[in-house]
Image (cartoon, rainbow, N blue to C red; front, side, top):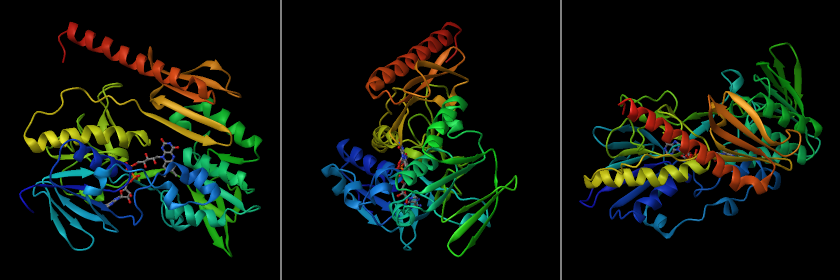
Length: 410
Ligand SMILES: Cc1cc2nc3c(=O)[nH]c(=O)nc-3n(C[C@H](O)[C@H](O)[C@H](O)COP(=O)(O)OP(=O)(O)OC[C@H]3O[C@@H](n4cnc5c(N)ncnc54)[C@H](O)[C@@H]3O)c2cc1C
């Protein structure tokens, strides 16, 4: 390594790309090497279950617009980081190379989970452009599609498949779709919309067996129900890609635990961004959490780059707490769902405006605090609802700080 210094970015998708740009924009003069196990240039994933699945994915239209700074980095596609030694500051690559570095960015995101063996090999998952291409070829009019999992991606695939003329069954262990992030009432309302489009749900049951024969999959559920499909999609969530960080004494139970400045395990000159980063957000509390939403790689990239550049310069890190507002959207039929804050932390759900079978604004409260809101439709209320959630969380945090300082804590 030359004297100019090197930052290695592991993962070349949204988080890796935006961190690379932010590093150069922040004044980094050294090398940046981006390791990307995928062969495609960085592309956006949300359309993979929506428009790109409906119309066929096109790598060029999905590719991110990049700042010119991104081209200053050395992009190594088709290369996977196998291991990392944080103490020695080296990364071992799948092509046999060992790269030393001054700074490290973990941007490895998540992988699609599959059912446990022997069920896991059956059917499709949907995480990458290639997954989308493979699934798209089978979603022909009249095909019987079985979706295992009723989270966002499962529901979006169901909606897209219906739009393509498929007949769709959704199987899930939860009692309603999207139960964990949105709660029972909103999940049930979304279920009704799917059912109006002809989707059949088999909820509150596990998959007990899958038999693949002659191009069909026979899925047997824990209560003995059998569902037959020509196409099977496993959409049962994700697993953070952290195997390459093993052996460093880190907490890798659900992503990589970071401090509020996104330092991996609180160690200097190593940061994590995007879906893989589990960090405390003082907007809510001090519990480290991962957020798998498109906006989060963008927000964490800026902050992680600032932290890393300060560490590499031996300068103090930005003392301002990092408090990004989580947000996401989902498109199912003509329904746009938008979420701000952390509805999943809510204990009490309240319809603030409209009704759940039409357009609605739904508030999620924890104790006396509004912690999140979801819009079903109501696109014109987006800015107003976002501001409402931001203001409520900021005010609650201020009150908490005042209370803590009045009793002499922190
Ligand atoms: C089908 C789908 C639909 C979605 N829809 C929405 C939506 O509507 N709204 C929303 O807010 N969010 C949505 N998301 C989530 C959003 O796309 C993610 O939050 C975002 O992609 C996370 O970016 P990331 O860079 O952190 O991780 P990723 O996009 O997962 O990228 C990580 C990259 O690192 C690579 N990698 C992993 N391990 C290694 C290794 N060891 N060495 C080298 N490279 C490695 C991976 O191959 C991958 O290219 C959706 C995701 C999917 C899959």
